Every structure is written in C-alpha cells, then in structure tokens.
Length: 62
Picture 1 (cartoon, rainbow, N blue to C red):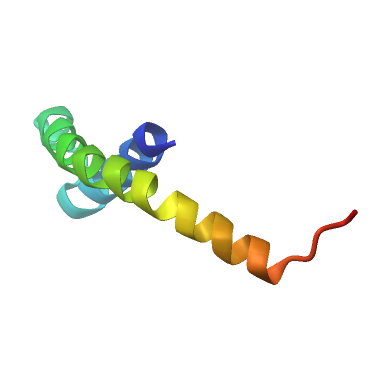
Picture 2 (picture 1 turned 90 degrees about the vertical axis):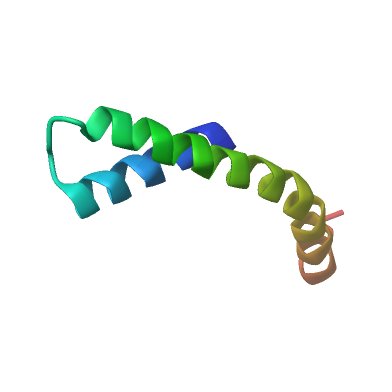
C-alpha cells in the first residue's frame, strides 16, 4: 500500500511542479524514494490506531 500510494502521489506532484521535462524520471525517483521512506513507517504505525478507532465507532454486526 505504501509503495503504490507513494509512487502515485510523488509522480503526480513531480509532474505538476516540474512539468514533463527531460529529467522528470530522475526527479520522480528521488521524490519517490523520500516519499516511501516516510509513507511506510507512517502506515505501519498508524494502522493499529485507526483499526482501534474504527472498532470503537462501528458496532459489531454479530
């Protein structure tokens, strides 16, 4: 999930900010590497909290 999300977000933001220039692939790869380093631990740390919050709000259907 983090891999796909960071890939899509960094590519869209890179093209939006720089346009379709010759070096866009290198710019995107640099942005993607930073985005993934941030996204993966964030998702890993936040997922249990979100699950607990959802469980507290949504009643069990049993």
